[in-house]
Image (cartoon, rainbow, N blue to C red; front, top):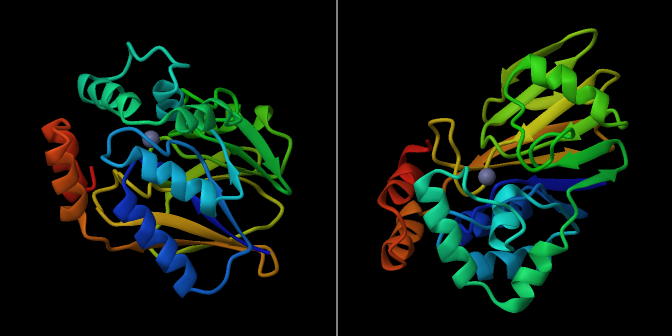
Length: 242
Ligand code: ZN
Protein backbone atom coordinates (compact mmCIF):
# COMPACT_ATOMS: atom_id res chain seq x y z
CA UNK A 1 0.00 0.00 0.00
CA UNK A 2 1.29 3.42 -0.97
CA UNK A 3 -0.41 6.67 0.03
CA UNK A 4 0.39 10.28 -0.84
CA UNK A 5 0.08 12.60 2.17
CA UNK A 6 -0.98 16.20 1.45
CA UNK A 7 -1.56 19.07 3.89
CA UNK A 8 -2.38 22.77 3.76
CA UNK A 9 -3.34 23.14 0.12
CA UNK A 10 -4.92 26.54 0.73
CA UNK A 11 -6.81 26.99 -2.54
CA UNK A 12 -3.59 26.81 -4.55
CA UNK A 13 -4.74 24.65 -7.47
CA UNK A 14 -1.53 25.09 -9.48
CA UNK A 15 0.52 23.73 -6.57
CA UNK A 16 -1.99 20.91 -5.94
CA UNK A 17 -1.93 19.82 -9.59
CA UNK A 18 1.89 19.90 -9.62
CA UNK A 19 1.96 17.67 -6.54
CA UNK A 20 -0.56 15.20 -7.97
CA UNK A 21 1.45 15.02 -11.21
CA UNK A 22 4.64 14.41 -9.22
CA UNK A 23 2.89 11.66 -7.25
CA UNK A 24 1.97 9.94 -10.54
CA UNK A 25 5.47 10.38 -11.92
CA UNK A 26 6.98 8.59 -8.91
CA UNK A 27 4.76 5.54 -9.28
CA UNK A 28 1.25 4.50 -8.47
CA UNK A 29 -0.29 5.27 -5.11
CA UNK A 30 -3.33 3.43 -3.79
CA UNK A 31 -4.65 6.35 -1.78
CA UNK A 32 -4.30 10.08 -1.26
CA UNK A 33 -4.70 11.40 2.30
CA UNK A 34 -5.41 15.07 2.99
CA UNK A 35 -4.62 16.60 6.38
CA UNK A 36 -6.87 19.66 6.12
CA UNK A 37 -6.83 23.32 5.10
CA UNK A 38 -7.95 22.66 1.54
CA UNK A 39 -9.05 26.30 1.37
CA UNK A 40 -8.08 29.74 2.72
CA UNK A 41 -5.48 32.26 1.48
CA UNK A 42 -5.46 31.21 -2.18
CA UNK A 43 -7.55 31.96 -5.28
CA UNK A 44 -9.23 28.65 -6.23
CA UNK A 45 -11.15 27.18 -3.29
CA UNK A 46 -13.93 25.58 -5.36
CA UNK A 47 -11.62 23.86 -7.83
CA UNK A 48 -9.35 22.63 -5.04
CA UNK A 49 -12.33 21.07 -3.26
CA UNK A 50 -13.44 19.44 -6.54
CA UNK A 51 -9.95 18.01 -7.06
CA UNK A 52 -9.73 16.74 -3.49
CA UNK A 53 -13.17 15.11 -3.80
CA UNK A 54 -12.02 13.39 -6.98
CA UNK A 55 -8.56 12.29 -5.90
CA UNK A 56 -8.57 11.99 -2.10
CA UNK A 57 -9.63 8.90 -0.18
CA UNK A 58 -9.35 10.37 3.28
CA UNK A 59 -9.62 13.98 4.36
CA UNK A 60 -9.91 15.78 7.68
CA UNK A 61 -10.82 19.39 8.49
CA UNK A 62 -8.37 22.23 9.08
CA UNK A 63 -9.04 25.55 10.78
CA UNK A 64 -9.43 27.36 7.44
CA UNK A 65 -11.92 24.74 6.21
CA UNK A 66 -13.96 25.29 9.35
CA UNK A 67 -13.72 29.06 8.99
CA UNK A 68 -14.97 28.88 5.38
CA UNK A 69 -17.90 26.72 6.51
CA UNK A 70 -18.63 29.19 9.31
CA UNK A 71 -17.88 26.63 12.02
CA UNK A 72 -15.03 28.58 13.59
CA UNK A 73 -14.79 32.03 15.12
CA UNK A 74 -12.08 33.79 13.10
CA UNK A 75 -11.54 36.72 15.42
CA UNK A 76 -8.11 35.28 16.25
CA UNK A 77 -7.10 35.14 12.53
CA UNK A 78 -4.63 37.82 11.45
CA UNK A 79 -6.24 40.52 9.23
CA UNK A 80 -5.01 39.00 5.92
CA UNK A 81 -6.18 35.49 6.87
CA UNK A 82 -9.56 36.86 7.98
CA UNK A 83 -9.98 38.83 4.74
CA UNK A 84 -9.10 35.76 2.68
CA UNK A 85 -11.48 33.61 4.75
CA UNK A 86 -14.35 36.01 3.99
CA UNK A 87 -13.43 36.01 0.30
CA UNK A 88 -13.27 32.19 0.32
CA UNK A 89 -16.76 31.78 1.81
CA UNK A 90 -18.17 34.07 -0.89
CA UNK A 91 -16.55 31.99 -3.63
CA UNK A 92 -17.76 28.56 -2.53
CA UNK A 93 -20.81 26.71 -3.75
CA UNK A 94 -23.34 25.16 -1.38
CA UNK A 95 -21.94 21.68 -2.01
CA UNK A 96 -18.45 22.91 -1.17
CA UNK A 97 -19.64 24.25 2.18
CA UNK A 98 -21.45 21.00 2.89
CA UNK A 99 -18.31 19.04 2.08
CA UNK A 100 -16.15 21.20 4.39
CA UNK A 101 -18.76 21.09 7.17
CA UNK A 102 -18.78 17.31 7.17
CA UNK A 103 -15.03 16.71 7.26
CA UNK A 104 -14.03 14.82 10.41
CA UNK A 105 -11.62 16.44 12.88
CA UNK A 106 -9.57 13.34 13.53
CA UNK A 107 -9.28 9.92 11.89
CA UNK A 108 -7.37 6.69 12.28
CA UNK A 109 -5.90 4.96 9.22
CA UNK A 110 -4.09 1.75 10.17
CA UNK A 111 -0.99 2.73 12.18
CA UNK A 112 -1.71 6.45 11.74
CA UNK A 113 -3.86 9.06 13.41
CA UNK A 114 -4.60 12.06 11.18
CA UNK A 115 -5.20 15.46 12.82
CA UNK A 116 -4.70 18.89 11.26
CA UNK A 117 -3.33 20.79 14.27
CA UNK A 118 -2.58 18.27 16.99
CA UNK A 119 -4.35 15.17 18.29
CA UNK A 120 -5.20 17.10 21.46
CA UNK A 121 -6.72 20.05 19.59
CA UNK A 122 -7.09 19.12 15.90
CA UNK A 123 -8.15 22.58 14.84
CA UNK A 124 -6.06 25.12 16.71
CA UNK A 125 -2.95 23.67 18.35
CA UNK A 126 0.47 23.74 16.63
CA UNK A 127 2.98 20.98 17.30
CA UNK A 128 6.22 22.95 17.10
CA UNK A 129 8.01 21.99 20.32
CA UNK A 130 9.07 18.75 21.97
CA UNK A 131 6.92 19.70 24.98
CA UNK A 132 3.76 19.84 22.85
CA UNK A 133 4.82 16.68 20.99
CA UNK A 134 5.19 14.81 24.31
CA UNK A 135 1.78 16.05 25.45
CA UNK A 136 0.30 15.01 22.09
CA UNK A 137 1.33 11.37 22.61
CA UNK A 138 -1.35 11.00 25.29
CA UNK A 139 -4.04 11.95 22.79
CA UNK A 140 -3.65 9.30 20.10
CA UNK A 141 -3.60 5.51 20.29
CA UNK A 142 -1.84 4.58 17.04
CA UNK A 143 1.94 4.43 16.74
CA UNK A 144 2.21 7.38 14.38
CA UNK A 145 0.42 10.69 13.98
CA UNK A 146 0.24 12.83 10.83
CA UNK A 147 -0.37 16.55 11.23
CA UNK A 148 -0.32 19.80 9.24
CA UNK A 149 -1.13 23.39 10.30
CA UNK A 150 2.39 24.83 10.79
CA UNK A 151 3.26 24.50 7.07
CA UNK A 152 6.66 23.10 8.11
CA UNK A 153 7.97 19.63 7.23
CA UNK A 154 8.78 18.32 10.70
CA UNK A 155 9.49 15.06 12.48
CA UNK A 156 9.12 14.36 16.19
CA UNK A 157 10.66 11.05 17.24
CA UNK A 158 9.53 9.90 20.62
CA UNK A 159 11.01 7.42 23.04
CA UNK A 160 10.94 8.45 26.71
CA UNK A 161 11.22 11.97 25.36
CA UNK A 162 10.60 13.48 21.93
CA UNK A 163 13.19 15.08 19.71
CA UNK A 164 12.24 17.29 16.79
CA UNK A 165 13.90 17.95 13.46
CA UNK A 166 13.14 19.56 10.11
CA UNK A 167 12.75 17.19 7.19
CA UNK A 168 15.06 17.94 4.26
CA UNK A 169 13.88 17.54 0.65
CA UNK A 170 14.00 13.91 -0.51
CA UNK A 171 14.64 12.67 3.03
CA UNK A 172 13.07 9.48 4.29
CA UNK A 173 11.81 8.33 7.66
CA UNK A 174 11.93 4.65 8.55
CA UNK A 175 8.87 3.48 10.44
CA UNK A 176 9.93 1.41 13.44
CA UNK A 177 8.89 0.98 17.04
CA UNK A 178 9.28 4.60 18.04
CA UNK A 179 6.19 6.76 18.10
CA UNK A 180 6.39 9.53 15.52
CA UNK A 181 4.57 12.78 14.83
CA UNK A 182 5.07 13.82 11.23
CA UNK A 183 4.19 16.93 9.25
CA UNK A 184 4.70 16.60 5.47
CA UNK A 185 4.90 20.39 4.95
CA UNK A 186 2.43 22.47 2.96
CA UNK A 187 1.30 21.99 -0.64
CA UNK A 188 -0.01 25.49 -1.22
CA UNK A 189 1.77 27.85 1.17
CA UNK A 190 5.09 26.47 2.49
CA UNK A 191 6.72 28.46 5.28
CA UNK A 192 10.19 26.97 5.51
CA UNK A 193 11.88 29.49 3.20
CA UNK A 194 11.47 27.08 0.28
CA UNK A 195 8.55 28.03 -1.98
CA UNK A 196 8.21 24.60 -3.56
CA UNK A 197 5.03 22.58 -2.95
CA UNK A 198 5.68 19.91 -0.31
CA UNK A 199 4.17 16.50 0.38
CA UNK A 200 5.07 12.95 1.47
CA UNK A 201 4.55 9.36 0.33
CA UNK A 202 3.91 6.49 2.76
CA UNK A 203 5.05 3.08 1.54
CA UNK A 204 3.70 0.34 3.82
CA UNK A 205 5.74 -2.54 2.34
CA UNK A 206 9.00 -0.59 2.54
CA UNK A 207 8.05 0.71 6.01
CA UNK A 208 8.94 4.29 5.26
CA UNK A 209 7.72 7.78 4.46
CA UNK A 210 9.58 9.90 1.89
CA UNK A 211 9.37 13.70 1.66
CA UNK A 212 9.22 15.59 -1.60
CA UNK A 213 9.25 19.15 -2.90
CA UNK A 214 7.92 20.16 -6.30
CA UNK A 215 8.45 23.32 -8.35
CA UNK A 216 5.29 24.87 -9.73
CA UNK A 217 4.53 28.11 -11.56
CA UNK A 218 3.97 30.39 -8.57
CA UNK A 219 3.24 33.35 -10.87
CA UNK A 220 0.03 31.65 -12.10
CA UNK A 221 -1.35 31.47 -8.54
CA UNK A 222 -0.12 34.99 -7.79
CA UNK A 223 -1.82 36.40 -10.92
CA UNK A 224 -5.13 34.78 -9.94
CA UNK A 225 -4.77 36.20 -6.43
CA UNK A 226 -4.13 39.67 -7.86
CA UNK A 227 -7.26 39.41 -10.00
CA UNK A 228 -9.22 38.27 -6.94
CA UNK A 229 -7.80 41.28 -5.01
CA UNK A 230 -6.56 39.05 -2.20
CA UNK A 231 -4.20 40.70 0.34
CA UNK A 232 -0.82 41.64 -1.06
CA UNK A 233 1.24 39.89 1.61
CA UNK A 234 -0.49 36.58 0.87
CA UNK A 235 0.50 36.95 -2.80
CA UNK A 236 4.07 37.97 -2.01
CA UNK A 237 4.80 35.28 0.58
CA UNK A 238 4.24 32.43 -1.90
CA UNK A 239 7.45 33.39 -3.73
CA UNK A 240 9.37 33.54 -0.45
CA UNK A 241 8.07 30.29 1.01
CA UNK A 242 7.36 32.13 4.23
ZN1 ZN B 1 -2.87 25.95 6.96
